[in-house]
Image (cartoon, rainbow, N blue to C red; front, side, top):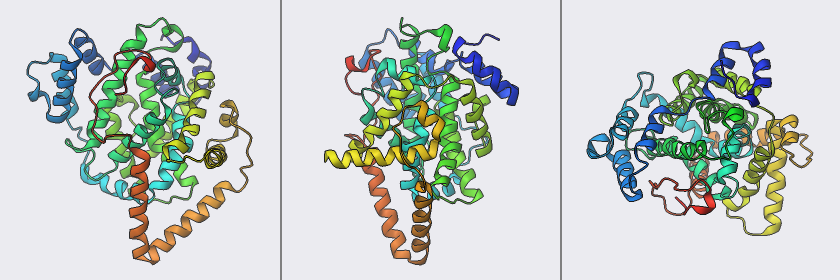
Length: 390
């Protein structure tokens, strides 16, 4: 089996723990997304305005709405609309309720740990070369938050829900960036494999699902078994819509954690791109939160670094060159506060209603950038600074 050179040392270690999964992971570093990639190839000679019309009509109304589009595009939307037998929308309700009951802690764990851990792989090179997370960190952080929020809204993953539409749009965005990177002299395929590979999309989805549950638990979020399984189902289906290969779809929290563990072993240690990306995400957080006072921004950044260190662990934090921080008791205090809040909300229903409403409002503030409409424009240039905002 051909293995990109950067993965060979880690693969040798990972296969000692789970040979089958390690082999699947590195195999998928050589695979993109055949259906979505075919769409981008088929539309290369089509004017941008026509592309946008087809994409919008396809996402909004399905393949029947684009009879004049290339077959690859109609096939893509027909497949996207095909619901896998394991997905039942009714089974997502418990996970949605659990997410919105603890949205502050979930978004805190997402921004302070899981995004960082999910992007500490070689996927950081894709974002660094294009500048789509380093130079545009604030907007991208809000877009990641929005996707998380939308898929956990009731009905968000139904065919007409914005969670469904955003998941499909993300898949096409990845395919477009993959197309441009693969043809760029800046991309070393022998060392890194395929840009935005199937392995990286699967790894990120495992982090956003099982690892997010684990990190939220470290902050004091206690869910039932039904809620955890429902949470996983939401992410499994969103990942399916984003093109995660069936071989890398995690059905349970344990499967997601094992994929994250083995994938992290296969990946090389974080390099300068991952370091810039991780620190950029943290420093973008106060801007996303709407904090304008410089002293308050610095204080929040220090706080996030402290919590992030406690969540992701000293080894990864040091690799990412996070500043030193005294984290003793940080998580214990957060767990105590969260459990007290949960107890008070259970004892005082009116407080629970106000708390949920307040959390929802803050989640919207952290998740929307400009207009709420979904953009169907795909990037035209490899480098974000040459591209108008989507």
